[in-house]
Image (cartoon, rainbow, N blue to C red; front, top):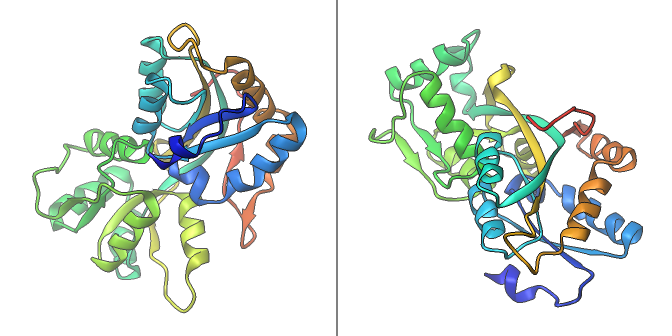
Length: 264
């Protein structure tokens, strides 16, 4: 993995595994230099799906995680691989597709919308990569019926979020994305018409991000001290304000959430 090959052996490097959304949106490019200025620590990260991020923590390849799949994170904590899970921020998931589908999904609740996708066999692109987004998508299929993984109209891309959105666009299909990555995607278009938001706004679509330190009892060489320092820093009022004011084309991508009593 390129990430591992490029990591410095300097003790002042903090290794983090995170999701594609925190990287693709550019949030970490803004925060990392400020973290270095405030602490003297270089933040080095790899962006992968949450499942792979947790695996990197389990394998002792990183010191800290910034991920967004609560159910899987809790299982990871219960297994003893991570500790000190804390809330950081949230946004929400949305289902997007061609504007021609807008009237079809108008005024539909989540179950009605997913039932309609099944009934009309509307092509749907799943990330299929055990990412936080993929985990939520699978949960939504289960909550509204069953996972259509044997259906011809259900396609797994095995790729990150921006790539999956582009595949959905090319194949006239729907996909589930986090809103932050969608805003970033729209900002990259020039004369092209973006995919439209078709389903949004329900509680089941909220997307919570947490910071987790890799357990030093499982990984003796982990930089737990600086992982704690990063966790405290990213949840501080100063950085929560930076997250709140991080925008693309005037649109907010994430809402700070560190004041929650516990991670969701």
